[in-house]
Length: 232
Image 1 (cartoon, rainbow, N blue to C red):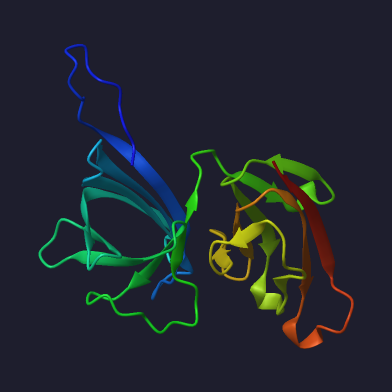
Image 2 (cartoon, rainbow, N blue to C red; image 1 turned 30 degrees about the vertical axis):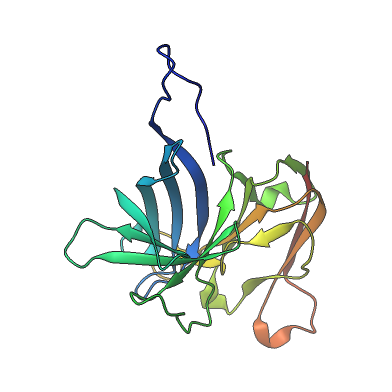
């Protein structure tokens, strides 16, 4: 529960305050993935839901990346589900609360969706993401808890090679599956593989990536990169 200072007249000021930002990559039927960032606001001091702001970037579409911003009302239904009103008839989106830090996409009846791909948004901070590229390999970066870390690596799937994360475990969590976005150049010109993480706890973690054909996992990688992330 959040409280505001009394107004000059001694009354409680009722206003809207942000109660959380959630981000992640959701599955997409006709693109590489939907990079989503959801801001939830509530009336204070009552905690009653007021409005949301949702930014969705459809990555790797035929026309490149495409971003859509939506704002509207939200509510809590069935006690544990966040429901977004998308502003169209019968256009609602439901997320099941999983603890305090995860919103998992569910169907219109609140039932779990059977997907192999991750389909959750995780609580993150308002700090801008730190983006690492291939040329940053070997560097150590400092981030705060809740801050996002993006890794962008050039790739060309027409060669059969792809980037894989070689290690796991530590203070970073993945915000969904990696996304391969084809470049705007001619077919076969390559693209970018994007990885999305968020810092959930203090500590240190090394991110190691290898570029090779999946059928040659026991062979030396064509390229490797690594980064050390310190979470304050």
